[in-house]
Length: 244
Image (cartoon, rainbow, N blue to C red):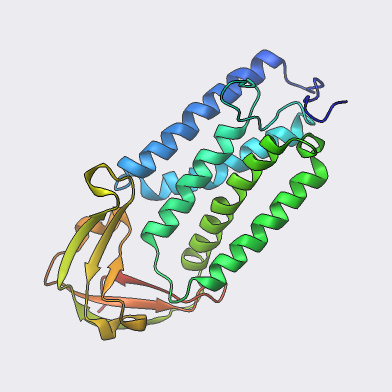
C-alpha cells in the first residue's frame, strides 16, 4: 500500500460514519480554539480538559480504524478523513493557555522536557503509522501538534498536580492590567496583577492570572503569592487568596 493512501479497512465503521464523526470533531476543535481565545473567562477548566482529551480521542480512533484515517492538511487537497484539525486546534489552544496563564521561575527545563516529549511522540507516530513515512505534510501536522500539546500538558500537570503545599508570601495588589499583544487586533491576552517584587521569584512584580480568576482580584487586595516546587520539579508561582 502507498504510504500516502490511508487504508480502506475500517473495522466497525463505515466511511460515511467516520466522515460524520470527523466533521463533528472538527466543529468541536474549532470551537475550543475560538473559545480559548475570546471566551477564556468562562468554563476555563472544562475547556482545558477537552483540549487535552479531544486529540487523544482522535488518536484512539485512528488506532481503532487501523490506518483508515490520516493527518492530511493541504488546503487545496482536503482529505475528508483527516484528523489534522481535531489534533492541532486543541493542542494550540492548550499551549497558548499555558503560556499566557501560568508562571514559572525558570522556563528552559520545561521547554526542554516538552521538546523531548514531543520528539518521543513524533517517533511513536513514525513507528506505528506508516502513512507518515515519505509524507512531509502529514509529518509536519504531527510535529505542529506534538510540541504545543506536550508543552501544555506538562505545564498544567506541573502546576495542577503538584503534591506539595508550597510556600506563600503575603503582599498587596498594586495594579491590574490586561495586556494585548499586537494592539487591539492582537489575539494574545495576558491578565496580570502587579505585586511587591520581593513577593515573587526573581522580582517578577507583574504576575499572570488565570482568566477565570481575574474578576476575584481587585487593586488594594491583600493576597498571597504561592510558590510551588512543581510535579516535574519546575518551580511555579501564582497569585492566590490568602487562607487564614
